[in-house]
Length: 432
Image (tube, rainbow, N blue to C red):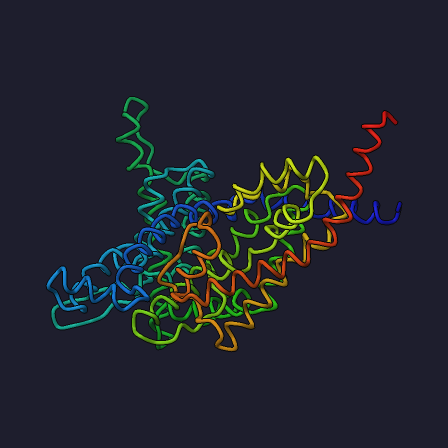
């Protein structure tokens, strides 16, 4: 027992230190802030995309009849929202991350934000025509999230370094800050923009591709391969659950790194679905939210099925309803699951079972791969989310299968814990 305790103590110590470093890292926190700011727009766009490409043909026929427009026309009008939000996803993330970093570094927020936008546009591919140069909206979408994150960090860091050296136009103290701040930013912004201009010239001169494509091929592709692989997502989920077990918000830590990857994979599926092709990526944001996260729900369902102790009977009332909307805090703190050695194995591995079953079902073609058209909020009830993200009842059935399996994983451990609690309660009742 001592060895077991010392093992968990050591593991908690290591993960605690790692979590502390991550939580103090301003760049990871800024990325997390940026992706959280971007999320509402993915949900808003999903509503319009679900209507536009509703999986029941009769719905499309009804809209055609009511509007009197051809399907391609009213779909194009609905897709305007997607083009205006997800279509500029990289730019939105750039703005959000740049602002967050500037605030954390205590430098001029507006000027850093505008400098980041100029630098980002400098590295965005142009289309040359006889009427001038144009930027395709697709170049500003989720495919540019990776390079947007790098640009945001570089701009903020370079700007901060130059600013800290005092390389700026200093105005008299009597000049209002609203007037002096833009002048003081001229030199830092000029040097940052010149840096990215030189980078653009070098890439144009040495490579027959754009900075965006070059970056995605050299760094983006390995990141997508890591985050989009079965092995990668299992490792990430186990790490997240380990953090949760020791009371650390695992999804928050992991999300700062993995969400940009999942979003890029999600957007590739969305583009393929709109084009009428098969979505290429089994793993994406919808897979993570709607299938890989089915695990802890098995604990409360197992308690509802076999729990006999007074404590667990109360837990049925407290945790059952919140978990309909994937709110797991009552379960985590009420049972409790965190720091509970009895539940360590199912806590860590139940999600892995769900991942393996879901991945296999998608890979074998038993269930349509998440379309990318719908990115539902994490509070969307299971079964409903499965249908929405896959556009098929098979997605709901897959979630039900996963729920059944994770409940079976949890049942023996719940029985052991419940019996222990029953004995404790019997001792209290007898006055021992």
